[in-house]
Image 1 (spheres, rainbow, N blue to C red):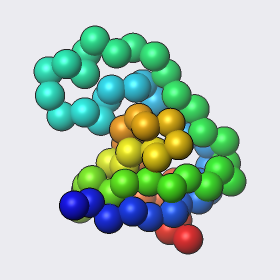
Image 2: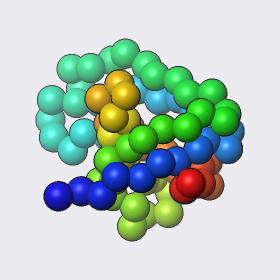
Image 3: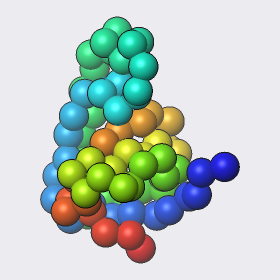
Length: 75
C-alpha cells in the first residue's frame, strides 16, 4: 500500500497526462494538466527516490503526475 501525503506546490507545474504511467499505454493520452503555485494536493506517493521526478497520484483528479522535488514541499 502506498502512503498518502499532502503537498503544496512552490511554483506552477504542468505536464502531459499519462507521462508518469510506466507502461506502453501512456502514449494514448495527450491531454495536459496544470497546477498553480500554492496549490495543496492530497496525493498517493509512488516514487520519490529520484530527486528529478517524484511520481504521485492526485486523489482529487485521480491522475498520476511527475514533479521535480524542487517544485513542492510536504505539509
